[in-house]
Length: 87
Image (cartoon, rainbow, N blue to C red; front, side):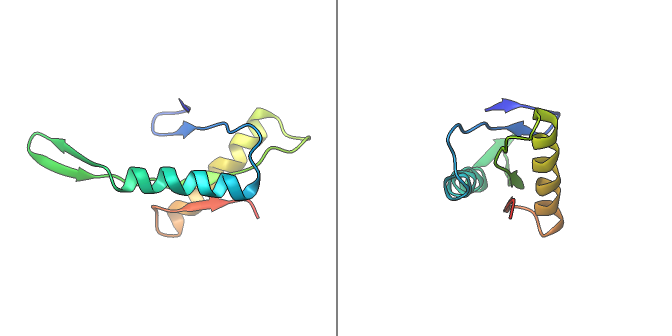
């Protein structure tokens, strides 16, 4: 897990298939959604819009990240707080 951009994080899961990728992404989404932060006596809820993709032999790091980024924005457009994977 690492910070990729200002508000973006990247997770690399060696050996993942589509099913395990979806399960792991959903676990992180649920964990984040169930977390409440208390800041100066104010409770703040957080959520995660996640885009997930599997690497293929033709991928570069840039192409895979761009695809995941597109999927993440699709999650946001479809209502946020969700996981969208490659079809």
